[in-house]
Length: 393
Image (cartoon, rainbow, N blue to C red; front, side, top):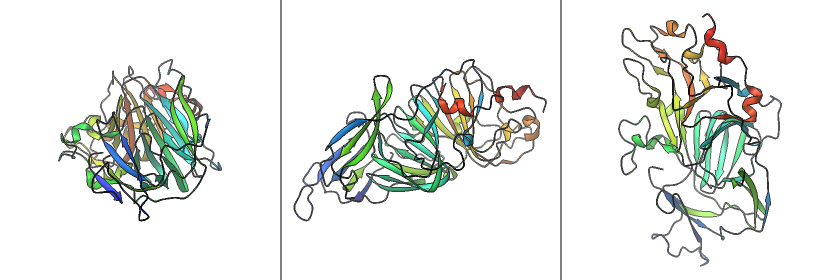
């Protein structure tokens, strides 16, 4: 995170005694990245945070991947993955894998039930709320999220996701950390003036709270001999027992509607839409905006071959001008693999001329290694999208 926060009760000097009113010591935990060499926070626990009373294995949701072969652009209809009457689905064990590679996995879930307590020990997670709302309960405090929110959850943060009625979530699981684009930040981590969002747009968790409980299961996703593995640790006490914390590492939320679009006289390339980055991928968002104002401008994207990237677009609102006529709508995902030139559907070039604004909302993930297909992608691929450019407008 680019700036410091403190919540609850912390001592005036780090790594010193911090005592409760009865004189008992709190237990200090340093949660930090890159081997004590990057962002960190100090959390003060009522009880020993390392205590485990039992352990067992669990199988994370289906993780198998198959190559996108023959190489095709694809249209995934995520709203087909969960029946409207589905009940008892949680946002951790109910996730379905769409696409993935060695750097990132993209998943989707429609949840109506509180998840188990959970910790991803592989990498940071970015949760995008397509619709509905939830409370992200964390060891740092509670973070309410709603439609259009991104929630960044640092690696190994103990948390659970509690839907408020129901929530559709698009999940980006990294094998690294996720943060704002480096070019938006000063050498000391402050957002620069040209950044499309800033610290005022970010929401941190509320104050931490001490929850009583015993024999609490925490589900861990971690690396195993064959990739992703799962373990359940049973803790003798509740993991939410933090009385205070401070530092620059914590979960936070950012709403897509607080992103200030960057526009120009002619069409701007996708990097102007970037919001986050991880190792081997970037996250961009396309929001309602005024479009190109050169008198001869063509506002929709030019055809392009991203020779070093696979491009994944999640369409979550509005009417995406360049994809009209392809069957894509809210909840759709398009995969445009590297090696295939892609761009507007037939007729979109001509229709866009003279447009002053686009009302569209989409989240894009560009990866720098090829993506393979998860079980969910294979289940909701429309099978027709690759051939839509050959049609007459």
